[in-house]
Length: 500
Image (cartoon, rainbow, N blue to C red; front, side, top):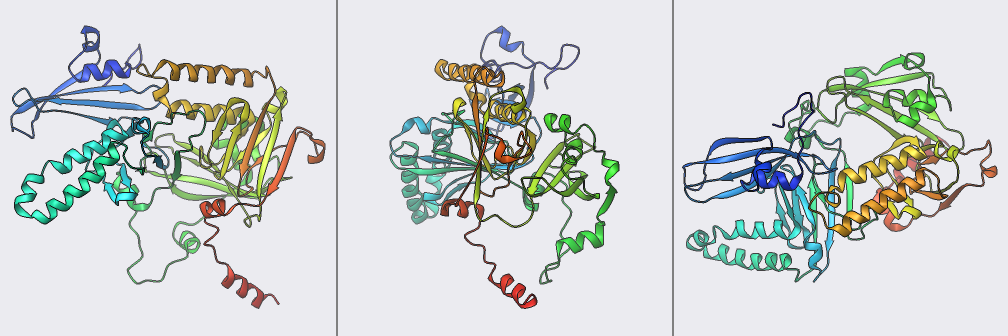
């Protein structure tokens, strides 16, 4: 929709795009790459006009704005659809809305076509097909749901008065939430990973907002249009061991380690190149062979290859390195999974960064680790960015790029000046840290002790800038990691029986 050529793709700001798509604005707004098509009005049955415009929410994602208007009956509506690729993982935002805090209700929400909205206190759910993709607020989404439920109440009262009365009572409760008269929880779950709730405290953490990233299920993959192989298990069949299925049907391919190539290790870690991550880690402990498994691309859904191997990192533990590359769309991803048993204690790593060599230290951040930079007032919850292999400098840059991409509302043309100034100050402080104008501290807190920062000396005790602390996990941490419900008594009994 947006033109491309020698001058590149035309990208307009969000305000101009909205004015142009909505039919308003000046001549410059109408000069934007706008498409108009004739479409059917669902209210009166005559033909109206739909305007389509591709634009970009600054530092967020490309979107397609659609605005429909019928000149016969005056019907108008708008819609937002995402023009970019699906994200590798789904996301689930959870926002706690206290009573009487209307500013929380004004937080902007990006809801994609595949997102589900839930309010557990009312056992209320808005399925993806009930509300199309939209750019709104928490209050706006709730009030839109109220209006849609209220629209057919007159017909319900004639057909089923009791059901209509029950819905009226429910609408009163739902309307009170939209007005801030009661506390509730707003959950936004999107398997496509393209939805978002504004964090007004960004780049700092928000105590009222939490986000989790998860792998999509087979059903979610199919609902998003990915090619999913049907399950071969018949109802009532015994579950088949996954390892044996892979070995029997698809054969685990084994490549000589030399074919991967253990070259340019430090450069690969600094650049985060998935194709060379395996070779980068070989300088710690070179494995005999790299195994290859068939996989599915997280971006386009086509078949691809995942390479993995287990290695032992000195001063750390055994890890499993996984690198995936898709030849169809060019998608690349690398992950690091901890190997061996779950440690009894968590680990907190504190690094005092003082010189350029500290920025080049190798870092392994697992998907269970949280990151803090006190001088930058930066804090990321566990799960952000997933598991990555990089350097200290690379980790900070990746985090800031992710923050700027997701929290684009704070940098757009319609944002408030104090919010924009906050981000400008954040970027200035970031530049000072990476240029080492003053020392700063990097803290990696991992409840599973699966993260690592390389020491500058052969002995950890001789590295005065690196501190590693072990701690006992809290009940909440064990609950989040799923350890409270883990029962290994039967396995322990079987092990003790076979090994007297």
